Image (cartoon, rainbow, N blue to C red; front, side, top):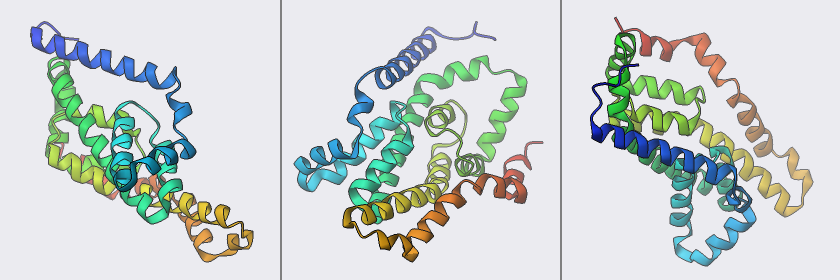
Length: 235
């Protein structure tokens, strides 16, 4: 690992980044934060927010992304509160906002360190990611690569910010829609108490989408279209 070329500024940045990451992890995993993250408590907070409830939820979702809160938990809460369609929109915007902020944190605080310690082989991958940024990000999003880790990690690569945003925006559409539609649909059945609606086509459709989401990585690997796009021009 070559660190002798690191400037004092780079060392300070990576120290801040490491401290932030450690504090965020400890705060969420070893505090009462997760106990607060329930649909009931969020509903109380959002009811008090009135007209600004969607904006408050989006801001909280973005903050949660940066604090390593599981995205599936926040997505389920959004779908449970706002329903399938509005939940999908607000969750997607919140996830995109959090992904953008985390990327910029990784880029500003960690890029100098990553560039300095990268060997020749890693630099080739870094160059390939820069050339094929959109396809690489899209592929990794579609195969459900850990969301928060990828946000910070991509910031430390040479991928262009617009490519990252576009790849992320398209890549999380499928999973976000499937999950929010499934949770939102089941919420409607639960609230009405009409369990015969479990035989409604919407329930079967959402359940089918939910199950299908687990097979997306296998389908993509079998077809290999995006994988060829991300690897075809590395030479």
